[in-house]
Image (cartoon, rainbow, N blue to C red; front, top):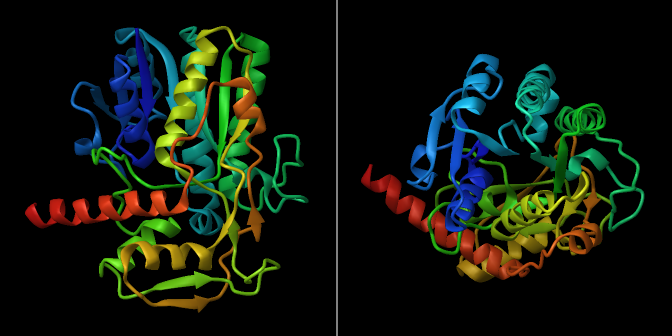
Length: 330
């Protein structure tokens, strides 16, 4: 029996693959490599290059590899892009997720873990935000993910599919063992952008919006280390295998940092006083969003091991340096 990881060549997906392999699981990766990388995937995994929305491919894959669980990462994730290209996001994130869920139900796969997002909350009425807060996404990205959550809820009720949907806050950092990290060119993740700037890969960076109703006027986010995030997925899989009911839970630490605080932390850890210029707000960005992780902690055995912004930044910087050396040899 195997675990299917969609988008396993991507940032979070590749970390998940390494963690599953470390735990002795048989892993099948489905990725079209439009943004992911083959080299980021652990060598023991079976790699299938293809589209997660290809229904004929999915039908063969589920049978040939005896899929017992699905961990679904594949999708588009850039909020401003979703505002500019909404139909592309609904197709890639929602329509293709429909194909995957349909295949899972048809093949009676008992366990499904979905990569959702805090963007389903929009600008929350209170912070920290818990899972019972109103769902009012402000971007097609957030709405596309919420639609998939709704499909899972309905599929669970109709067909008995048990699932966990994990609503990510801001994922950052890299594998402490140096095996994989955020490698996408032109990435928009704040810590990735700041690390690139500190290392001279960018001439400077922009701070989008300095007039938000926050202490320093910049957006506040809850940053979670990618290794702690994949540990939550591993615990979610154990929870489902142990007979746990379907669940939607936040993945964050419950502590927020502003954009300027993150920039200053990257400057401190890197020792580089790089340029960060103010710019207009980006569409779809809420002012402040911080997780309440109480549900995650109470239902799983999850305990974070990397809950420290300087540690997250240090791992991101180490990966960025390693990636620079790798690219220099290609």
